[in-house]
Image (cartoon, rainbow, N blue to C red):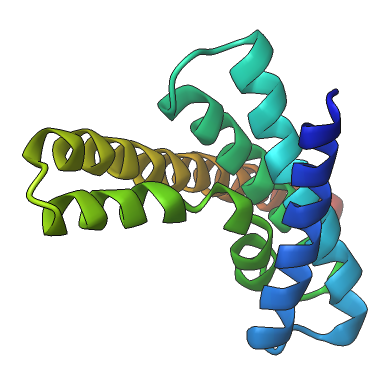
Amino acid sequence: MTHLEIIQLAAGAAGCVGFGFLYNLRKSFLPLAAIGGFLSWLVYLLTSHWLFSGIFLPTLTASFATAVYAEILARICHAPSTPFFLTSVLPLVPGSTLYYCIDALVQNEGGNAKQYGIDTFLYALAISAGMAIAWTICDMVRKIQKAERDLKERHRTL
């Protein structure tokens, strides 16, 4: 890890705490938001350096890990997973590519605007796909566990 990456991880964690304040996240959950932001950016950095190139797969992997983290926290803290996910996924949000896309449009640079627009779309698609995959798997696991509990309960009553 380089110094720049360590600064990025710290900034991601701090930014998530800031958004936790904006979203009125419980104060006791703010450290969890910081850990989530750190985790989401760490997974992104690791996967983009060693596993995948490009935008989509590292962002998908990081979003998936963040959604699983949010689901785990939701069960532990007896709270919804959405606030944990929203505050933790913020380092992955494509703010710079969206800004540069709009700037290129204003400057009448169609080629740059197109590339930045595609990049922004890929980031957003990967975040939503990672979240959807993780939440679908977690929902299936909950349903399977419930079915197993119901089956055990039926066997006990027989």
